[in-house]
Amino acid sequence: MDKGKSVMGSGRRWAVGFTDNSASPSSRDIPDPPGFTRASQDQDDSSVSKQKKDAEANWKAQKAWEVAQAPFKNLMMMGFMMWMAGSTVHLFSIGITFSALLQPVNALRGVGKMFEPYKDHKVDLLAPKLVFIALNVAALGLGVWKLNTLGLLPTHLSDWVSSLPPPQEVEYSGGGIPLH
Image 1: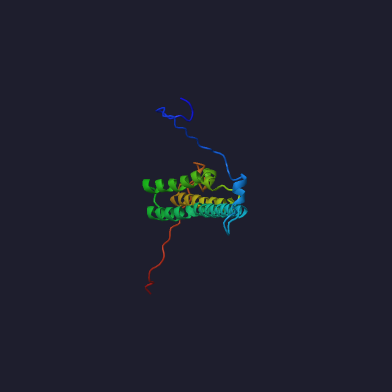
Image 2: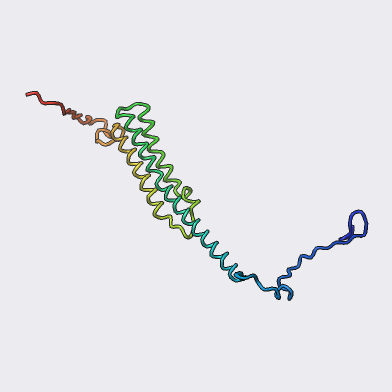
């Protein structure tokens, strides 16, 4: 089929010109409307795109700080759960304690992945990453403290040498009203 001919063969011809007429002398003769110049349009586009990039960088920085402070909520929740578990050695308290140890370790292993969506040359991620790491190290310290209160950490010499006697438990109680 020839280009420009209709399907039915009626002899009609049509054509579409895809040429840019803005450079032709006839379009140069038509002045721009009042208040519009081609240079100002290009400048407005660049200022709008710069504002969008700045807004996106601010959003990324805000979200990075939210991610950095998220372990604080987990720290408070885990502390409450460990307090509720008590200080006796049983399945629930051991499970909560090891969960409190594994969550910060896994979070510390994935710091790079956690902040990957917020990478930008305009966003400084060093401070949020340091806060994230510090809060996870604090959570790890809370888990180690709970292991110590449960008596599961080898802190005495008798824990390592079987021939030594275990240390004497010193128990005391206090409070109440003195009856004289």
